[in-house]
Length: 119
Image 1 (cartoon, helix red, strand yellow):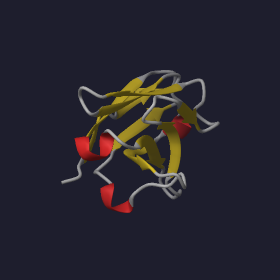
Image 2 (image 1 turned 180 degrees about the vertical axis):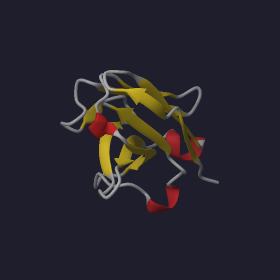
Image 3 (image 1 turned 90 degrees about the vertical axis):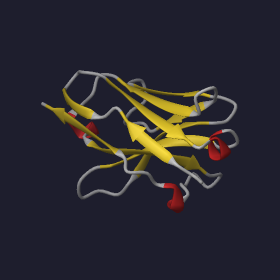
Image 4 (image 1 turned 30 degrees about the vertical axis):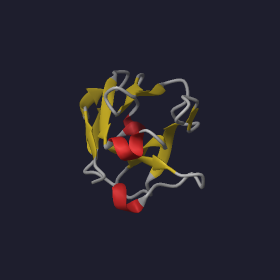
């Protein structure tokens, strides 16, 4: 059974930091690129960070230099370290597989974790 469980969100002031975690089923974690997506109110879901199975990373321009994605194979967990947070980072954050098309697998979405950044 495929499961993705996000945690670590919360309320933080602008300039603060949060670390998100995503516990994934081993069956999808070990062979796929994994990513963090976010969806702000009234906006489409967007991909903000990707980490390949080999460890290479990519970031959306809006978060580059502030966010760091990492993965722990022993724990089947993907992390997103978020520093220098801005109010525009406020969104529900989700993790998912990143396919070769740079899209997610729709059937894998978890409940997400809310990040709220106050000004």
